[in-house]
Length: 345
Image (cartoon, rainbow, N blue to C red; front, side):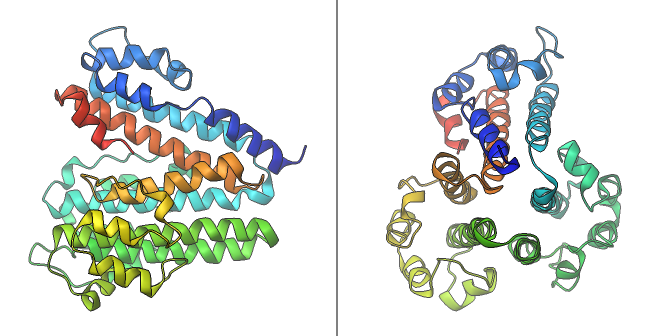
């Protein structure tokens, strides 16, 4: 069996042990953080991580850290099946995590809460990444200049350093996100073209292309929701200038739709209609996560045994970890189960 087949088979087997919608419902209905921990102890992907916790009076952050540790273990298990020829994709994953960390830091710092920043990067990616997270965490007192200094020597500094700043000393969040995402996607596509050939390259470029389109779709929903009114020509300044299947005609229909259900309808026939069930998400990021989850679930079920399959599994595992942590927070703060499930993608 080739390395690609072995990695794909392992990813599919691990995917079979994922949490289901019923698991999420039971976690959301758990009685306190201890109840969530008790449920996760019986869930095979989390049993080992839960064993280090006490049997009761569990601290919420300790439980969240244990859930994150289980994700790191999953990454390590997949890595054992990925050969040297496919290790370039690990940098692809690390860069994706770095993007999330930078934007999480900007979101906190721009609202005067930089002191609350705590790196949440999986250990493997922290070791192989480009960012000094200790320096980033210590840069809060230096404002935006402190962030740029912490990013010195990384590809993320250049797209951020020339952005116009608002009166609070920070750039507009959406424009900063587009700048960082544009840099990341440009690098990702260049990396795939340099390291892969033939059908494997096409599969990865397809995955990156869809992620770019879904990022732009998310941006349109976010802008229409939080920054109305924005005309079509203004919204284009907030989009990554790369497209895959999101044509100008589809984008025009999306922008002309009067409300979010109509916007979802405008995506039908675009190649992305299957990714959205018609659900209107409380958080605009839900449109991105729903679309990516749909793409990667199909890759695992029907895709050929390329490195795109373990990549798909790792994205879905990251999303599952995010869902579980959101539910832990909801249970901790007493959010009703039905409302808590709105935060699960």
